[in-house]
Amino acid sequence: MIDSNAMNGRFGRRVVALGVCATLGITACVTDEAPRVLEKGAIGEVGSPIVNGQLDTTHDAVVAWLHGSKCSATIVHVDGGTGYALTAAHCLGGSNGTLRQGTNHNNPDRTYDVIEQEIHPRYAEAEAFDFAMLKFTGADASTPTMDVLRPSQDTMSVGSPITMVGYGITPSGNNRRRFATNNLSNDLTNDIFVSYDQSGGNGGVCSGDSGGPSLFDVGGTEYVAAVHSFVSQGPNTPQCEGLGVSVRASGVLDSFIQPYIDGQPYGRESCDVCRDAHVRAGFDIVANCEAPLEDCLQSNACLEYNQCSANCIGQSCRNGCGQDNPVGKQLFDAIDGCVCNTACPTECGSEDLCVPEPACWIDLDDDSCETCLDNACCAEATACSTNNACLSCATGQSTINCEASPEFVALATCLENSCGDTCPDFGLPSGTGGAGGTGPGGSDAGPAGVGAGPTGDGEDDDDTVVSSGCSLGPPREDLPLTVFMLGFAALGLLRRRR
Image 1 (tube, rainbow, N blue to C red):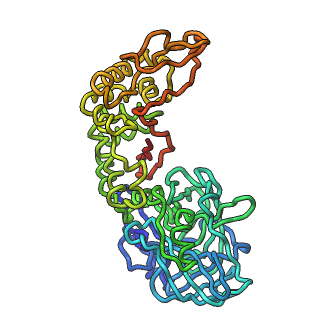
Image 2: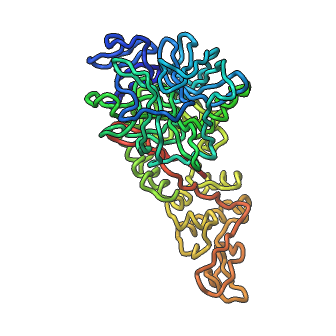
Image 3: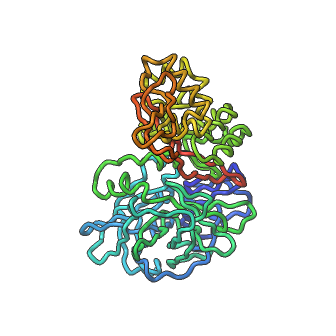
């Protein structure tokens, strides 16, 4: 677990937190046996500092925090004689200790007394919020600082280069600040986590680097982009050569870091940040939506639905996946149900993610019309929802040859015949041509002759959108998949949008 315990991951991975215990003797911190739960502040194993790194002489705002155990931290703000440093939540506990500035924390350039520790208030419910703030005294105008990456600056994605800095230890002890560079991997990079492959000689983090920064360059300036949290590795993987994971600082800058500095109450994260913090896989850490996620992972139907949806382009395809596999979709949707109702109701309750699925697969702008559709035309709507041409016409995204779609004609006819009073404006583009000639609809009226069709020159290039008081809502936009580590598998979780 992140709180400095070494545990067996459910998917064959071992999570090793990166804080270290006060005693550097091997018997106190190292075991060659299977990972076991240790006391808070301890680690399962001790490895080299900053894997495949180099001595660092430039990042003076990165400091060592010695307080009965050792972690790294970054000074992010100074106000007169008071300073503020960002570190990892799992590092907290014990005495306040001191921050030591310099390339060698045993011979520091400056020492600052920590007077307060503040843990992220949601860390206990979701250990992805592995953030903490330290307040210290003794600062002045010469105290170095590094700014935290703002959300508007955070363009990090798979392949982005980062620089990791910290004071990791070896069994014989290490007091030097080191750095390493790597690129973000596609194993776990979302709104709260970033990851980097530390195998095969790649640079990365290890014990004692917890709380230190992953730095991202924006316009020639380095910013604190993430906080070192843990390394996930297989039981036979060399120490700290697995998957390094840091927690993304931009996601909590405006809700936790800046409010603490300003003496203001804690705010709330975005829906995406909260969701990613509570829906994780492959790591044995606390998260509210663990149960529905694991139910999905244990179900072939759910995994098949996920694979089907992941290969889709467009909502009509995803609707088809759900209609073909209702059991898998139900299990999959339970994950978002947990997010909306249990983990993040405040952050996500008003988001499209939490809008109930339409009973008959198509949303209407008019609730009364949708109720009539559900009661009288559900079969037609369901058939239309899996046909891209029909769905495009029904949502007003296209008016080209809509009358050529049997599914759309059937839906429009049903609504006109059964819901004419409730849905008076829904129908086919009737297609009576104007001065430019006969348009795509020709001279034939749609069912019951509702509305005039687009005018044109006879070419099928008209992109006029026919809107109505009972038009169907736009299809959910296609967004990138969020991929979570599952040992040897991956579950793509779609952010649904209407």
